[in-house]
View 1 (tube, rainbow, N blue to C red):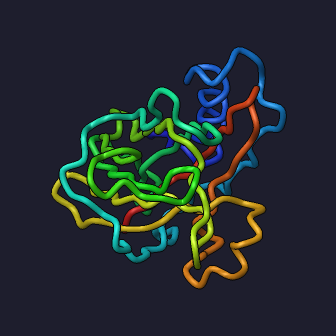
View 2 (view 1 turned 180 degrees about the horizontal axis):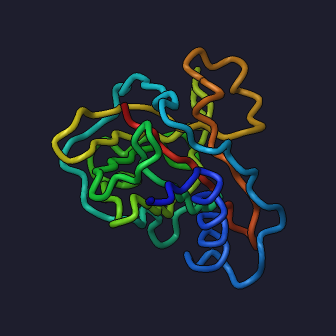
Length: 195
């Protein structure tokens, strides 16, 4: 019988990776990321959200969105892309775009925009900065996730403890990134479950 991994197992591996293998820093995280519930067949898929007005196709393939001299709180976001029955999805496309630390989007180029593919174990890793607030919106990162030959999930990821979460009409607690500080960096974790 094949042992099906749980999200708790994935999270344990991901938290370790976020703190040590991903180059965040040499010390341990100040606070561990909270474990997610065990994955069960039939789990609800990740909530879809609007694309918004700032999506641009044809972003460059890269996992590092931070550029030299870029202002903002650095964050390494890791996670998995999973099926509803907890199977990791290799080769899934993730296309990220976001505002900078001042809440501004680059609409003429591809600053803070990029796409990547999950590895053989369904993992992804994104190094970026925490986006700023702007009028009417709390901090968020946009993402499109698509398995090979499958439907596209468009959604947004949010940050815990943000005052503007309460006033942003699009905010959904199901889309909160789990975070922990690590020597000046923020480690983040989010697993996508695709229908």
